[in-house]
Structures are given as C-alpha cells and as structure tokens.
Image (cartoon, rainbow, N blue to C red; front, side, top):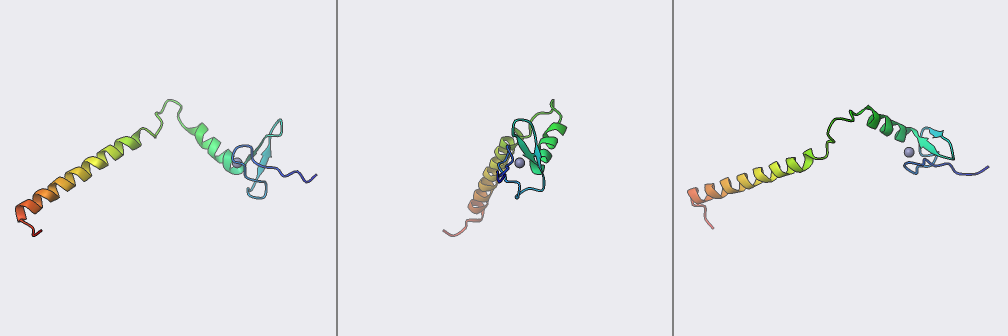
Length: 83
Ligand SMILES: [Zn+2]
C-alpha cells in the first residue's frame, strides 16, 4: 500500500508532521492540528473573540497619528520653519 496519508485539516502529508492520527472514515489529523484544536477547546466559550479589539486599536492608532501630525504642523507654524 503506497497510499499517501495526509492530514484532513491542514493537508500536510505524514512525512511533514510528527504524528498523524487516524480517525473514522479515512479522516486523519496531525499533531499540529490537534494542538490548535485543543487550544480552541481550552478557550472560554463565553469570552468574546479577540478579533473585535483589533479595529479599535487601529482606530486609536489613527487618532494618535492624526494628533502627532497636527501638533507637528502647529510646531512648524510657531517656529516659522523655512520652506
Ligand atoms: Zn494538520
């Protein structure tokens, strides 16, 4: 049997992973996907997903950049920087 086994989740072949666990109906899962899955299982299902925090961070970052830019412009006006 030269059938090449691959992880049903990430598609890595048996040679690419440390372990490939066989499940029912020719399904296989590699050690990496088991680690990812267990991490997902450990997460609190009631906790909000971390994704929504990112846009808020970028919004704040944009605000800082705007403030920095306007304060720099004011500084240039006050010091009368040469053009
Ligand atoms: Zn995998």
